[in-house]
Image 1 (cartoon, rainbow, N blue to C red):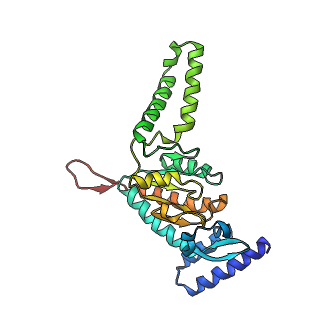
Image 2 (tube, rainbow, N blue to C red):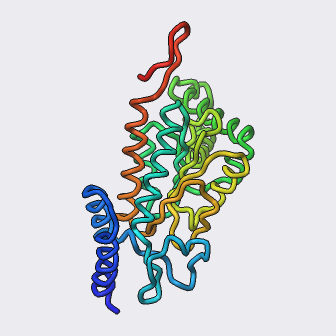
Image 3 (spheres, one colour):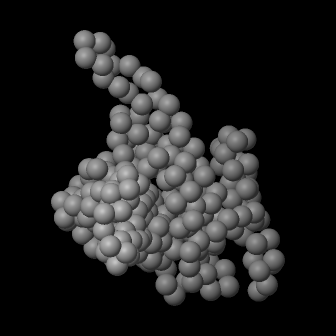
Length: 265
């Protein structure tokens, strides 16, 4: 079956379900937009995780079709959870190393002033944070010394060695400079291919949210959004929604001023 025919068939099935359910006009439009972006494309049927069955609408031409109402439901629950963390001053660590998500994750983190990992995840980033934090602090120190001209007292060879060390540390830990403590939540944009961050967070009792394709293990997340993260446009749609939730929640963050009642910013 050609891709066009697949899309038409899946759209009819989703549309029929939408007509039978009671979604708001806004929600209905969102589901239709997700159809257009291919958010419903799951992994191949052979790779489908049995635990993801409740998120699957049907199977077509060898791949699983994600139930977009489940996606919408997951997005709602995840948004509420993220908002609760951020409003109360909690930090969210953004993670995504797959080619389809890494650029968006870095951009999100920069815009939201949050820590992120968009390259290789170093084992122990969370579970051995005491050691990792020392490397992050060393990176900060090197950057500060270079900016202040403190390197001028060294020979050219020594400066070259320092530059190499700085480059390496920036590649490994650059996205974590804002993480001076363990995060209150970890958001993983590519759970299917990036399980270690979720496992580390879960072992520490840190809530995990993320995008789960049909070959993912939903037990790795506390809040899952069933969606196609392998397609950049599909992933960007979901991540844009998450970004907006965090951005809005930051404007409602609770602060405690000595001698005053708790209030919003």
